[in-house]
Length: 55
Image (tube, rainbow, N blue to C red; front, side, top):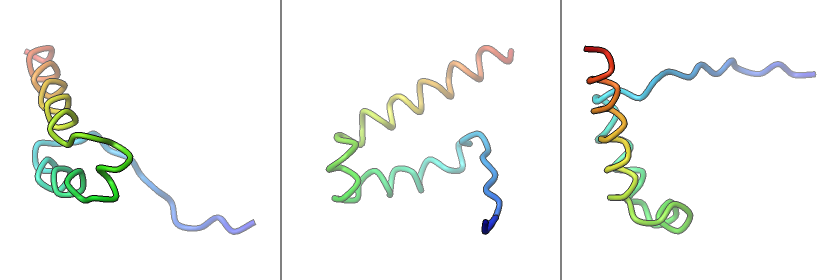
């Protein structure tokens, strides 16, 4: 069995938002995920909650 290249996941940071926004606005992504602004709002809300819970 080929083990391939390991994949590491990390938490989304505010530095990633512009790249995520670019992806979400691609036609083939919109087809599956719908309105990009809804996803971006959810990401921003999650980040706000995380920052207040750390205070």
